[in-house]
Amino acid sequence: ESRMILGEGGLLPALVVVLVFLRPRDVPYIARGFGFMVGRSVVGMRTLREFVAKTSSDTGVSKYNDELQKGLAELYSVRSQIRSEIIAASPFTKRTQAHAQLRQEGNASSASASAT
Image (cartoon, rainbow, N blue to C red; front, side, top):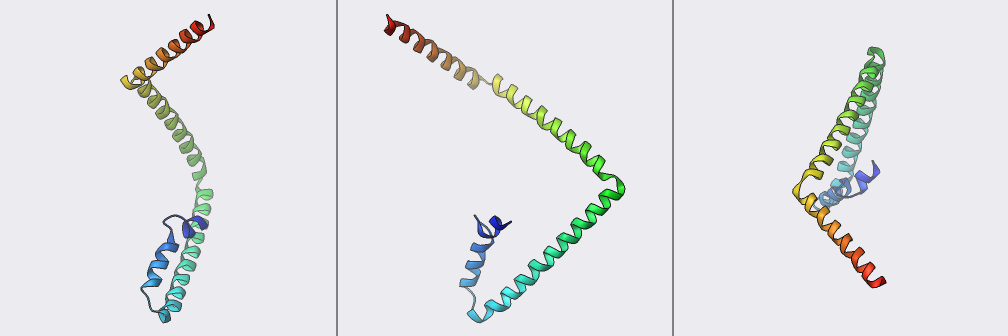
């Protein structure tokens, strides 16, 4: 969370730009309003989290959530298998593998020639 406020493309650069274009006497009012909005959003998120936790424990949603997570894990596994098969079957991969094999054979033959 702190990285979003202070980090790359976060809120702090936007606030600096806004403060450059404001009058100094407006800064306290804007800061107070911003603080109020942040406080209200934190309270709202906390209330929402408590509601979701209570609702999910009451209705047995956690069981369905676990099944959904397992299904997603299986889908990700299938996706990675399909991707690896597509990559292995692509002509570029075959050419790269053939080139690497030729290079290894060339290195092996030059090593045996220099050894004799």
